[in-house]
Length: 476
Image 1 (cartoon, helix red, strand yellow):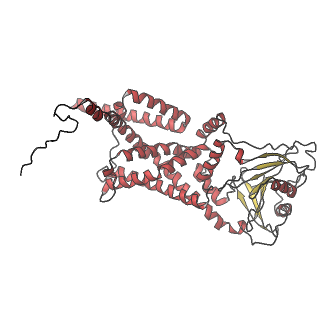
Image 2 (spheres, one colour):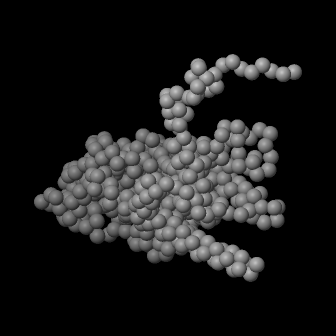
Image 3 (cartoon, rainbow, N blue to C red):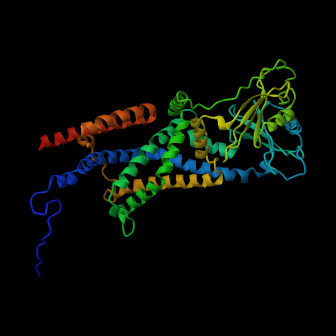
């Protein structure tokens, strides 16, 4: 059966059937430049995402696996060291000075570096000793004391401001530097430097695909793997960007640049003045290394309490005869408690105070970002979120390599994305893009160095392939 021709005018033409009007032509042509621009950029983004995924994925895989273990180490630590960390609840806690004396009697070695009085009814007091033989110089020996009976419940090596014990310390160091020291830190900084690039590239590629091509139901093979890879990556991208940014905050090279930038913007973390400043400073200080300087720990702690410093707190004895006690809150969970005061050891009066509310905004954001990255800001909730995020990164890496394999013929990995994509990008876009990449590479050195290395290798391989092609053509 034949169908009568439509009598309505074609789209974009006027009612008289003539050529399209100027307005119609403008409407049709408007999105074309954007489409052409993306058509030239997409192969470049795809090639970058592919090579970054293939070459950086091993570093990301190690960082994700060790990050998963680190997040899980918080609840594990409470179970493994339950005897040292918890005590039976008694009637009344003893003075802190008496608890420290019991710790010093059991461990007279070294000097008292800090004291963390029992923050909860069933928690022990920690007395941290520095300069102990056999203990890493960057660590302390934490002696755990029952605040009700002054019984010493044990001692463990401790590291960092969060009070990491041996299990978490080992995992933390493996995550940060593979336990290889400063050289090992390059791996984690390289992973953090590229994570945001891979995440953003994947996000752009995924959302540029047509909706019909993004569905999972009814798909098989490489298309299904791509669907899983893209869907999970899109949902987790914000988390990856956060992990990358906060991880770089305390990295070796980029971290130094970030600190310099924060300082120039007035966002450096302030510090309290630990000078005693009184005319009697230096008098009454003990040389025994037991922390009992001047008026003693109990009066110093009482002075801090009077200034509103609630648990948990850490008492740092004076570093020398001219210094004051520093009492600081050490609650990294929400809400953050980070107020601190300095107390003159001769008089027991507060000589300086620093409130977290007075921190610059950038300093607060840095504090919260690091605490969220390390899983302490929201406690168990953030630790579970970190485990899910690192697990998703592991799955994305596995799916990425699987897609590469599926691009082949079942016995080898598929061909890489063709080179030469940058030649299709218009100069008015390529030049500003190159400038931005150069600036980012300078600020994030390991990203810039590795990108230059990738380009150099790619150019060499391309030249070799080109010469082989010419030789074959000449042989024919």
